[in-house]
Length: 344
Image (cartoon, rainbow, N blue to C red; front, side, top):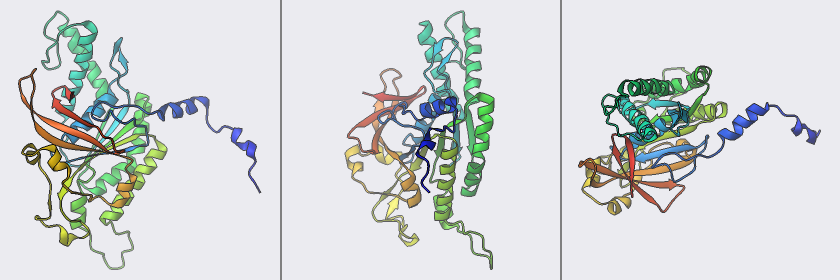
């Protein structure tokens, strides 16, 4: 029997829930170098690049933008005021760097609002009589932002999979405590355990009928859990991935020789130009289930050194290029104490 066509008018959600769903689906722009493409919850963005190509710095920049408030005590910060879940898979997360960027952003907006010059000294302003008040303001807002940052460290793919299974419960607890669930899901780095899982596959034990956790099976389970999370709690997924360069393909273990491929270090890029490295073939070692799950890709590279006229330092310059969707635009940026700065 055909379904009653009038059934669609019987709403199954309240007006407040419908409004929250529509507003959460609106596209938004992140800070550089992720500012070229409008993103929305449900997107999966892969940030690929060689070692030391500022992938983690891009994640931290986006995380700070997410946890900062829109407004605090009359001062406009322009943040999303949402919760970030940060999965540290390569165990290189630097909480001091996160705090440094966050403090700089807070004091920068405070200084621009009150038209004062400020100098960082353990988060305090040094040049006027409001030092004590500024320090208290900084620390109170800093703690408020850090409560919206959920840090999770994993030491294996099984740890990562188990943490994903419990993430929805943690998001609900954060929502009850802070009024907002997880909005950004960050993974640094998604390929951290791939080679360990590939070389250390468990041996079958007699009549054991448990599912063999091969790299392909683990990847499928991880993607499935993230899909479930996106259905229960709409969020934007940002995942970093180390790029491998060289000739040939990685279809089997016998082709993984040092002469065929290697992980390109930052020093290799500093001794060569961007155009030469752009044509160097690179391998996609992640399973197909992850490749098809990704909706956006951005590639990061290291360029020549750059001398800052302000700080008079030799800083590395990085180049970002959107691969999916393909854009004929490359952005140059550098990493300073206050975060990522685009070079015109």
